Image 1 (cartoon, helix red, strand yellow):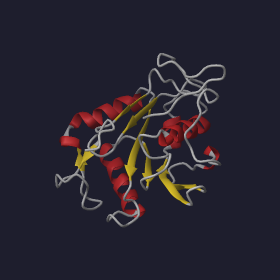
Image 2: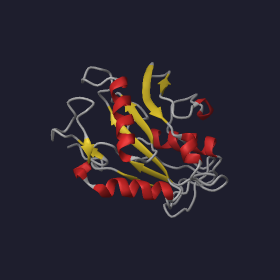
Image 3: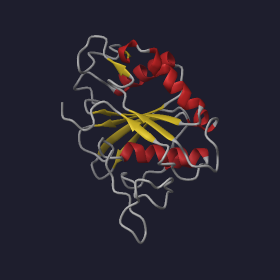
Image 4: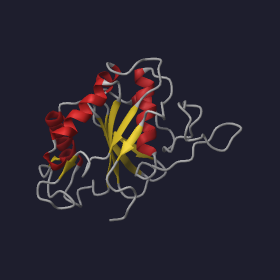
Length: 212
């Protein structure tokens, strides 16, 4: 994930900084988005007025995160890509053929155990996924994806918030940090945490920015 972090009087925050607060970071988000409008366990869309379209679909497990994180303390985010990190296709194809074409990555029991351990350790687990074909043209509709994520949530047994960037050009699409920034803003607002503990937070993916 790529985004310069600007601080008043300086150019960047050093990588070793233990915690970054709301005032330290310039979020990479569309103008006018409001974390207070996010509902608990409710599927919602983010609209970018400049682009004239929805750019992100998300569902936050606010009450379940709040039960584990410590109010007044820095937020620890555990971010993961979805495809080929938590799950893979059952067919072996790069992209799923339908909403049921998935299984836990390599059918590995450690995936569930690790996510459970992070949740129990006070992390807010968030899944950030690029879904450029989330318009029906590629065979995937928002309803299909919602059902898929709910089934994955049930299989894993660990509450995680899910964000999907829509389309191929927006601040919400990785490697831009819009989805990470929105997760941090929403969870800090609703869970009452103070900033993000960047030394403890992390993101895990499979592609590392590679085109293939």
